[in-house]
Amino acid sequence: MKLTFLGTGTSCGVPTIGCMCEVCTSTDPHDKRLRCSALLETETTRLLIDCGPDFRQQIMPMPFRKIDGVLVTHAHYDHMGGMDDLRPYCQFGEINVYADPIAKKGLLQMLPYCFAEHRYPGVPAIQLNEIHPHETFQIGDIRIQPFQVMHGKLPILGFCFNQMADHLPLSTLAYITDMKTIDDAEAHFLTTFQPHVDTLVVNALRQKPHHSHQSLSDAVAFAKQIAARQTWLVHPSHDIGLHAKVNSVLPDDIQLAYDGQVVTI
Image (cartoon, rainbow, N blue to C red):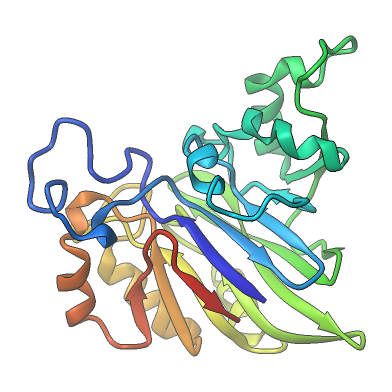
């Protein structure tokens, strides 16, 4: 599987409007962060993880071909505000969007014209599929198992992905964003998942504690708990510090990701 980080930033993006800090004025392209989203691909399957307000800008450099599924972690604008820009992909057929009941409700409220009884021509053709933690499903040759983490007091979804070959799962990717805490049972699920989590993507907002997001130290501790071969940190604000400086003090197996980065699972 190939994972492309379309965006790695927090809800405000980096640079933050009106800010003149050293990160927001940095000339290093690694310090320019669009809202958090990723594209997971095999030779036959293409999945979009979250579809935020920067989606159009993020997807333009990518080859134009079918998106087999859109997975929604939660119903916040920075993770689903770009759904209307999926319109061009409807020429390949309906867009299958997968969301838990809370995110499903948010999508229905945000895009009522897509689900009206009489839709006007040109609106995105979205098939909304309700999913739940630990109910496994498969899209193409990728098996997906949602699990639950807490974004402050809001339950949201993380995802484990396996590429299937000869009916057997290959290496596992675990993708988590906007987590503050995780129940012990869910953490145990990740540490005992078969096969073992090879690559972990998880959020780290800033150096100081936050009420609904992990801090950098929280994320590092969680990464060590899961013990993936490689951990990539996403969703940082400008308060995290300069990309190069932060990565220089992190272990080689726990690093900040950057927009446009491609990793092989």
